[in-house]
Image (cartoon, rainbow, N blue to C red; front, side):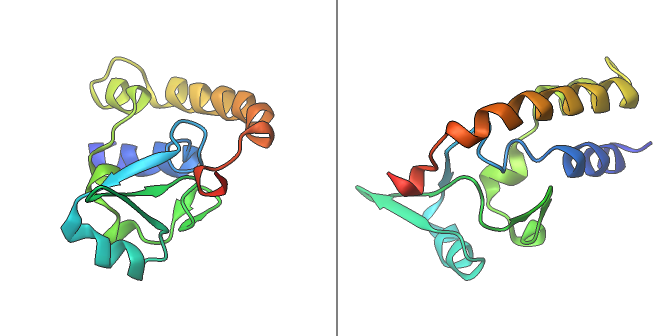
Length: 119
């Protein structure tokens, strides 16, 4: 499987980087703000710094609806499972097993977390 195909397979089964399980804030470069707003992201601003809160409002299940125009911070992020799988250090099935286990654990934690947008 090619690296882009592997990333697509693993990322669309996971989405923990988008759903608020791992992060509550993503930085934006100033030039990304108009597109982020057009994509429906709630842009937060403080002292000329910009970002958006997680869970990402563009996430539908485990698929991002703004994938082609996603912010650079999202485009650049590669979790350890993905990096290890792309490097051949773990196989696809092992990566999918880690994702399933981690999603199961996070499901128990997520109901008690409050999104950053809720203060």
